[in-house]
Length: 363
Image (cartoon, rainbow, N blue to C red; front, side, top):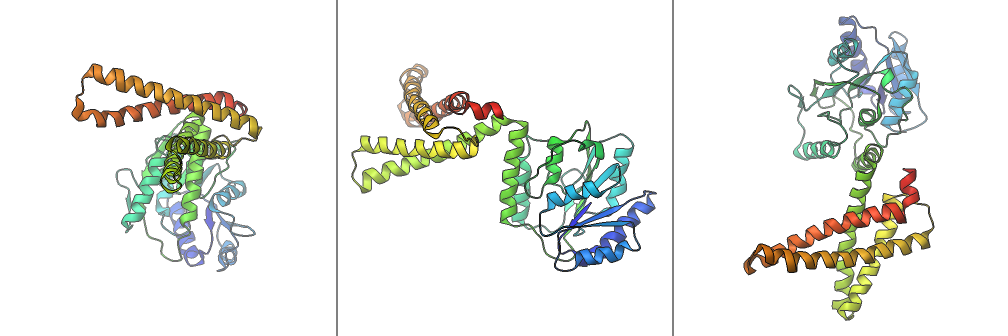
């Protein structure tokens, strides 16, 4: 399966190398090109090649995305072993026989062409792209043990995806399969990831944002409570920034008495936290007035709990441990962080089990 968009210049060499690699290993291979109505004539060139090669061409109405193109390719393919790769020749077709052999021998159900195992490498990547790739890999660390889950070059048994509801966002269909697929064994084969020979990269800022959204969705699928807590905590952190900004603005610029300014800041932060959690963390459609009043009550109780725990740590624990006055300010900060962590867990679970309980049960 090879999804294409404006890859006409690479198509002939790609087909030649795939067919040569497979025929030299005694493999009977069908190449499926899924083209998103490329304006450079990729689809038309693929049809010409198909007259003399074992090539199937799927034409789509527009640029609908790499992941959905791969899914279209799965439907069109007739083989029991499926291989996915890019059209830009960054993935070495010569590795296909090795990947397929691991599946045929029973060594693996899924095989990933990996840049990050021993023997793997990347050609001429700038520092920023390396950092982005490593960061994206780190985001997926708790979803799979595969060292290169971002790879777009992989092979699998068809049974791995039979009946599996795949709904990828963005371009990392391989990660979706690693998380949701039905398999017992996965292997990685080292590859040299080369620079594209012609054409332009399709990756941009929008794709990276969609990848982050995709990873969040996969965490919700695999570890729903952890995913929701991470989002809840992130919103809480943003709420703390909003609280501080409103407090300072009201007191310093509009000369509002600091206690009233604190009440205003708390109210604004809680309100923004509620709406962000409703839309992002829980994706709720429940009664807004009821939920808001419950969220406000939990937040107010959490504030009181915060003060009680902080006072206990500062007035009881710290003197008992005799840290000394010279370190008092440092331990106050540490005590505050510990308190925030404890209260965030309290707020999260009470809101999950009370304020947004219907959404939590559905998930």
